[in-house]
Length: 161
Image (cartoon, rainbow, N blue to C red; front, side, top):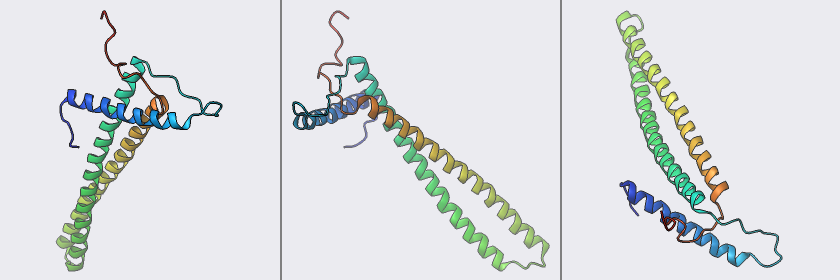
């Protein structure tokens, strides 16, 4: 299924995914739970808790998409760095170490690559941080929402509102 770009479409998609996930879990849980078993059914999700679960799922998905974009950018940066390092190695092999201008050009190129390596390393750190953020939201979702069930009309507004 392709990505839905509109906010309303994304909201309904998240709700449908959550409904399908919870419905499947409920069906499996119903098969596994037997009277007298040690497993306990978790309390049903109320409307506000269900809305928070939907928000957590949406945030997790957005963070995962951001992480994927950052990972692609870091990978592209790494490939460019590899190419620049090969060019620098070829330049080093071709310079005359007695020629000061040639050595200066090499040193300037090496300094530019070093600066790029620093930016690349910062991107790697950012990538790790974005992954940790997504994992934290996923863990929050799993602890609050995992294995929980709800009534299908739980997201409908209460009568009289």
